Length: 133
View 1 (tube, one colour):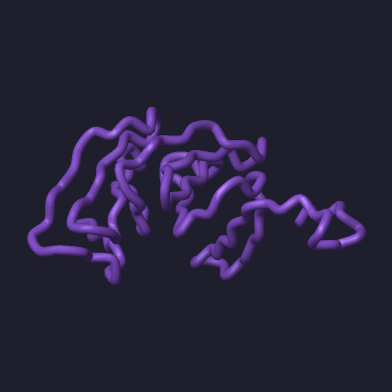
View 2 (view 1 turned 135 degrees about the vertical axis):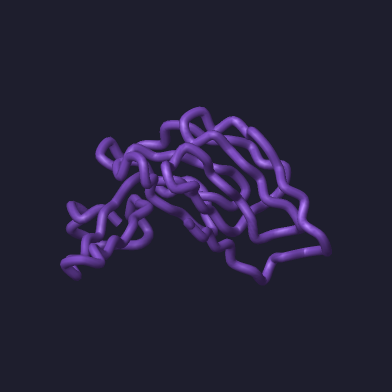
């Protein structure tokens, strides 16, 4: 709910998405609202390239401008995805966590640029991990 909402009444509140950040060097924490609640996302991440950009995923891949508190873009997905990850430079987004595929999107355009088929079946109980060498 908006901090300016003095009533704090759930029946009339305007709900917002928010994120919680921890600076691992200093231990400083920050809670930031970044957009109006429009749909449910299973997970989200800030861009490693631009910390003002927030991405969320479940039935759509969405990109938000945190300072302006608005959605910039959204991409239609062929099925739900639970996990979102970035490559090191933040130019690619990897969606995983359901079925047996990883969808790859361009982080700037939100256009799908590839897909990786994995052996086996449903991976819905897994969490995507990125390892940098």
